[in-house]
Length: 70
Length: 195
Picture 1 (tube, helix red, strand yellow):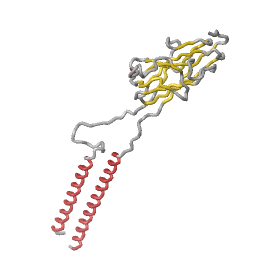
Picture 2 (picture 1 turned 135 degrees about the horizontal axis):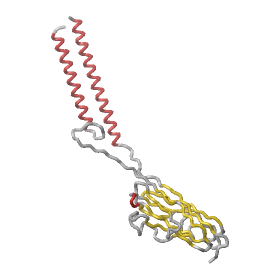
Picture 3 (picture 1 turned 60 degrees about the vertical axis):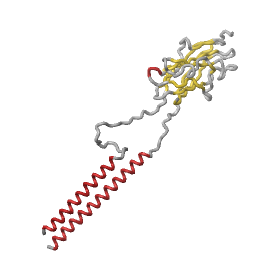
Picture 4 (picture 1 turned 90 degrees about the horizontal axis):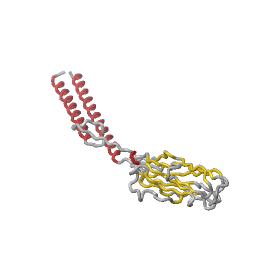
């Protein structure tokens, strides 16, 4: 009878330990979630101003030899 | 095993389940109060999505070559009669832009280096409404072409919607009297920045 009682209390102790672990895990996850969320509030703002853009074009002509001078 | 043991064990298990369920409910309640967590079902059927279109500066030159052909010394030609066609400058970005212009020298004759009256530019709307104010945002009369190193405004607040996002950049050239015969070229550089 004593042995059976010991087993019962051992099972109960295991249940309580499991419960404690579960609570600690839940608290840890919650704290990590809160930390991530707060990090989101403090995100670094990057300037959206775009860089200047450059494009090239060409102009051409031919100066005639012996053309009239005005 | 007596009934007392079983009763004690049952109470402990039920208590553990009750605490676990309560803690889970509490966690979900607290987590759902944080706005930044997305993807969680809510009690309301509506949702909100934020989309940010990035500012993008982009211009293109549908016509990027102006060839005046053969010219005698002392003679002038310009693009206002569309012969040859002027440059066309288009805003392909997502913001209004200011654009500057600068160019390498076209002539080597006396006084032919930029800026000079031998090589000039001005701007004009290609599509009506492409700028906000045609008087202040365009160069409406020919002015001397600046150097590449000291560019000057060719258009301000060039708009980006496709229906009105283009201008013409006209050129006016006069061959200096002492210009040597031969082929002359100049590279014109347009630089766009967000307005």
